[in-house]
Image 1 (cartoon, rainbow, N blue to C red):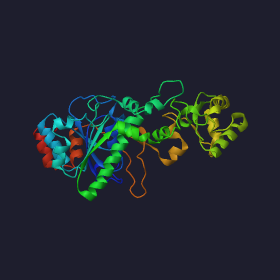
Image 2: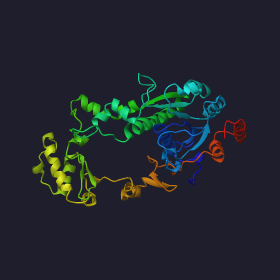
Image 3: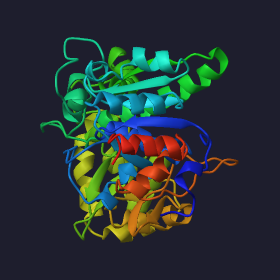
Length: 389
């Protein structure tokens, strides 16, 4: 375990209490972000063997870090009552079920806000609480497909490229719900009232693409993917393979930075033509590709080091934590033998604690998890009733 007890985590959200109803992906990511910022998060897991997401050993399920868990059978009214008693002491709640599920469990927003009028009730779904698709199953790829985002990502004359599940699940979902919870907590300090947050991944993914919808409306985007400045259409915003089969990224959008790129490549600008002219992009790409293929990735990285050419090596999962810049900043930390990203962003006066590893659910861990939420006598009563293991 980390040196800082989970109930006393440091960070700007220290003292904030959050209940997380166990789910997959975006919900846990949101809870992790808030726990990283100092909130005391209690995860209510499901009893018995339940398959949630991609199975892996607990220590590697990093989205479960920095908080403790208990197990409750929320189909049991007695367990629901335990959850409600815990919710009365919470500032916020995170749930990621299909619309209507928590209502059927007896943990819907109306019931919870009646018990705790100041509660921020955060709802995470792909399609949202309303709309024709609200009750339909889905995953990240479908959410970004519907919003136009997926269609825009990829190379010319090639299928859309799947950007992992970063855009819909985590950026469009987790980050927007975390922002919504923090904003609602801030508002509740003034109003004294809680509210319900409908965080839909389709909404968040669409919002992330605001710039591009604006450019599209202005007629500044070619409708075909892989033909625009920043979607691999231009020769100065792309990746190139080097002599060692590794890749280098190039992104000097500004003319003065582009000049440094050509200087490092020892290329005459006149050979390529005007940077901003789309007519020359297709012929300029092979020129840059041939040049980058003459040296290794790290050799090129060294040539462009400490310049404004915006040339950066494409690193893999093993290489990234070892890069001098990320190492000096502490962008990655090692917790329980597992290299993982450190909490972000950073705060000058209220820095976050180092993450602590996920914990198995056990009687001792359950007691520790509930210590900030309930008296020892209450926990003993719940256990005697069979509600807690």
